[in-house]
Image 1 (cartoon, rainbow, N blue to C red):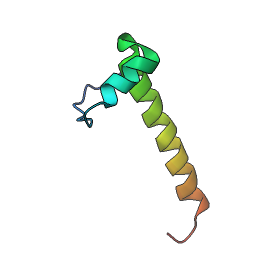
Image 2: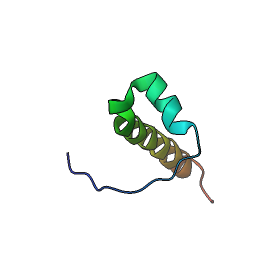
Image 3: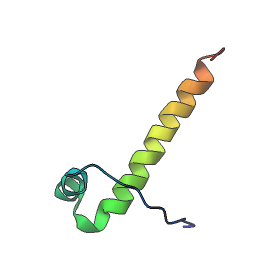
Length: 52
């Protein structure tokens, strides 16, 4: 997998919440999946709303 490292600042408590659900070693995977899902949602909405 080609990846580009980036720094993301998260509000206090968010990393701990992710770790509680996914485990500490799955934090990056969770964030990647969340970003992909949000991008897909927004891209779908963008193409289905003509004129904006």
